[in-house]
Length: 308
Image (cartoon, rainbow, N blue to C red):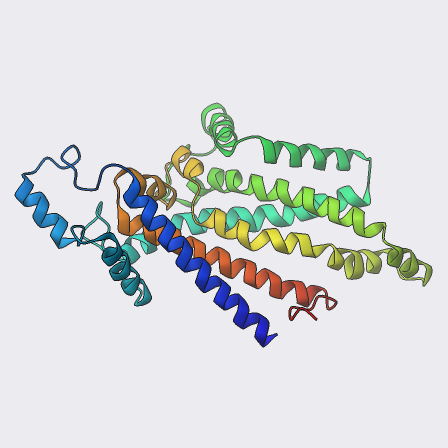
């Protein structure tokens, strides 16, 4: 177990470094810069002074090493589009709406999807099964911005029950949370139904029933636990991906979250903010998959993380 943890931590470190190098190179390979004449019409002397101030006049490898040295000390620099605050301050401010709305969407959608998939598997070829299949298909194929438009059209325009956009009041959160919940609900309904049907056809389920265990114990103590591994694989990465901001959902509902900064940092060549977003998200996904592997072993003792 300890050896596995060490190997995974080394793997995460290598992934982090490789991603940082690739992103840094690609950012500077894009034509243009944050202080071009078209974006900031100032004299060449002023522009040269700004470039020197931010270290953009130095060789690329020097810029990379200085930036990564700052990252090791939790200093991601100052965003060009908001020089009055640090990158950490900007992210801590913008992450709150994304975390609240996206996290709530996953925490609501995932249990509903599990329940729907569970009942669909236990009532195969019934109307519940057909409903689960329809919900899963629509949720995975209909783009989230179309879902958001429909929610605004029905509940904000036609019925007038909820506001169409905003962030301040809790009633403004309802429609974005529903839009966020659509994907995890559909995903978990599909995964749960498939995994449950596969497990129900295993020989050990027949043996358990022959031993006289109640159907409730068979389903919830054995079948559901053995079906949980695919769901564990999806949950943490989906939670992180949703909680870090959806460009479309936040744009449709005018939520001041992280989603907009993913776009603006690229458009404005905001190198410190763009690097920080990519590196933090990369690290979070690596940790999520690492925790998912640990959860595998807890759910199924037959899985040995040490490879033996």
